[in-house]
Length: 210
Image (cartoon, rainbow, N blue to C red; front, side, top):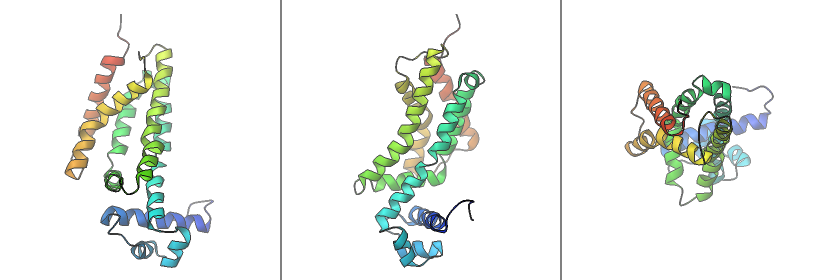
């Protein structure tokens, strides 16, 4: 599929990265060859090497390309945690969106792959964390500071409060999925878990009626 404004080189980059993502997730880093990626991308091996120097470089691009999804999540954070949206249940909507995105089966598989190669390529894991999860925490913490300033929640450390929310939201389902090999929870179960996490968060950080 061609994207408007995309150059031929950019399109080929995208096609190779998509093919590499599928191959790495299916066979792991060691089990994937550049030749296999070239076949999946409908390109020659020479073309793949022309766009990406080696397999490690290509794997790095795969990892960082998924971190780009965070831009959409951060937009949701800033929108749903605005004063108006927060008063309309924005925190619950955000929690449901976060758990749906972060518990996506393909993303979980990639997360396992990054962890499995963390000793060999620690810079990739660090970059994935900094460009992804850390940015989400920082954005949420910034919004919590504004909500605190407006008297809508009470936090002495907004970043820590954001960490508590993410911890309650993801600790159980994420670890369950990482250790068992798949996300066994239905959408309804994940949404109930998200709602319960928000309820517990607001019991501590919410402004209680006088």
